[in-house]
Amino acid sequence: MKKQIYLHLFLVGLACILITALVCAFASWQTAKRQTLADLQQVAQVMGTEMEHYSDPYVFLRRSSKSSVDLRFTWVDHHGMVLYDSYEEASRMPNHRERPEIAEALGEGQGSDARHSATLQEVTLYAAQRLSNGSVLRVARTQTELFRPLEALLPWWIVSLLLLILICQFTVRRLTQGLLDPLDQATRYLSQIGQGDTTEEERQLFHTSYPELIPFLATIDRQGKQLDQSLRNLEQERNTMKRITDSLKEGVILLDDQMRIQWINAWGFQLLQQEERPTAGRPRLLGKFLMPFLPPEARIPLNQLKDGRSWTQTVKYRSRQYQLDLQFLTPPQGRATRMLIIQDITEAREREQLRRDFTANVTHELKTPLTSISGFAELMAAGMYQKKEDITHFGQLIRKEAGRLLEMINSIIFLSRIEEMPANALQEEVPLGGLIQSVVEFMDPFCKDKQVTIHCQLTEDKVRGSSSMLREMAMNLIDNGVKYNRPGGHVYVTMKRSGSQVILTVKDTGIGIPEDVQERVFERFYRVDGSRSKQSGGSGLGLSIVKHIVEQHRGNISLTSRLNEGTTIEVHLPGA
Image 1: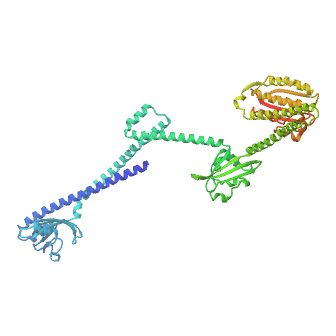
Image 2: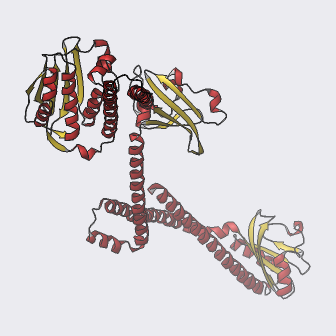
Image 3: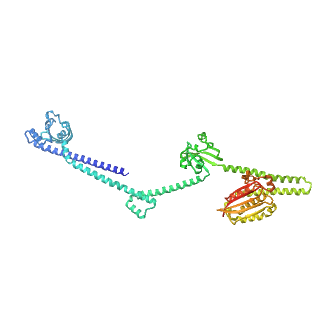
């Protein structure tokens, strides 16, 4: 920019100097021309007066021509015929009556003109004087003679021109620097304003030094603040949108017409990465074709990309189920014309399957006691009994089945409460040892009836959670240990601290669980031995309730068992 300003100003200055020099030269030439014509007119007048006093004008003219070699003398009669010329023979010259200076002198007494001479082949100045006898005396001088005085001034003009060029160069350099200095200082001033480093004295000094720039700087400063605020808002919105999209559990991918990736969120990036491919950052995926990153089962048919219709497909890949939705953006967002949403629906399908299984199990389990109750009631209503003791027996059976039914319903309701338990209900500091001790004391009559002994080794550690839910958990664990034990068997309940975890272990010496079904014992309504569980009063919901309680308390549960040797259940809960 500095070079351009300097060059432009210098060229303008140089052009002005040259134009001024040409104007001055032209004005000098015009002045010299007018002065020469006036001198020639005076010479013609003087010579005309003297010529009239000579008896032989030709002698006078020849003498004058010899004394003034730079002047040309021509004598013309009143008809325009040349009588004498100091440069040419008069007889060879054409009639001069139509020459401007001759015609003007014949009419007005004096005449002058400047034109190209056919005789001398140069621009010539003419001055004519009419004599008393009607003839005309013309005096001429060539332009070459006119420039001779100017040639003497030419060196001074050249020196003056070079001096003016140097002065112009120096002035332009200073002017360029003077123009750019305020801009440089304004730039530094604005940068200091942007960083907050300017003081009030610096602002006042700058405003005093360059008052013309105050509106300019104020406008830039205001627009800079607005732009900075807009950029901060855009950055905040971008970060907000990034956090929102990255927190989605669905892959969102924007694509162009050629199915090249234009934008992808974090979950989509994670879904597209395959184990056999090296991990790359999201920017490295932008601009690449989507198809190679999709498994073969999820390739989008090309005909779906032409008709503009939405496309949905569910695929199973690597034991997971995904739903792919391809939607067209209306209007397009820049180069992105369509959006692909990838959802992992594995858990949703599993929950749906669990709900179906739960409904089927509930229907089956509730149907059995209801069928028994309905059958016994029909026998009693039809009078199909022989003794009154049969009525008592049927009543006891109905009461037993109704109890099982009520217990099952209560367990289902309790499971629903566990799943809907609010987080603030799990903030109690529960002394787990004391809670277990109260459960053992409550079950003492049942243990004596089953001839099972409970051994406790408890600590004073506390866990964070719900005391009612933890009591239900302990009740089910100990109840199972007693219920599925042998007469004379034992149940060992121990507690210990391991870092931030409290470990509860319930070990029995009962019938055990076959290894091939151990993974299913925490399912709802699952019973290892249906007939034996029914005899023991089991509904298949106890361990399912225990697992849900542990998961709600952010713990984990594990089971080890050997058939006919016993079962050990270990629960890890976060300590208070």
